[in-house]
Image (cartoon, rainbow, N blue to C red; front, side):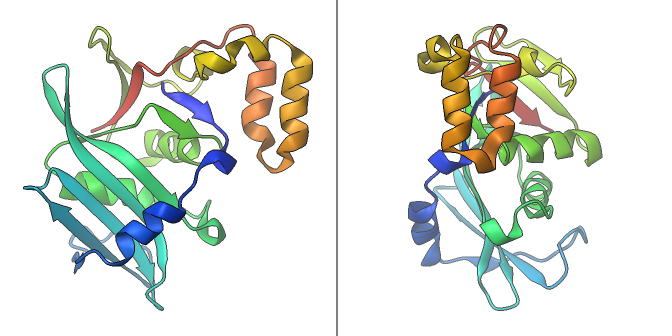
Length: 210
């Protein structure tokens, strides 16, 4: 799978500013999956080569948003996740998962992850999609186009970490320091600490939701 990184490294302010003034249109909930007291809007440009979905509450505040870009890998077209945002107050409530479900139901192609995912965050969303969605989650190797079914029990087979950080992971004290610096996101660093000898770079592995 993709590489993991800490949510603290994610700067979403620019994305929120970007989507504030786009000419969105309300998207009808024809699939009856929209969370209560919310409404969904979508925006597209360049013949749907870029699509943005955003979820708003009753006060019209942006709860969550996702930007998709049309790409081609291994002779197939996908909508690749370019940016995902879920407001901190609403995280862990299924709003991110809803955005992915909504996107695949309203898009012409399967959804492809980017090469870096947050843990916690996007990592949790993809696992939830794997366990709960009627659609399937698989992994595609962009080097050789091989595709395999995702198995959440084989973490180090699918999930990796940036190659530039690999040498630091060989020293347990460095991982302990990372945990100390970011105690609220110990989940990622607990994964790194427990699997430091078997983790490899996985940026060539992408998740597919179809």
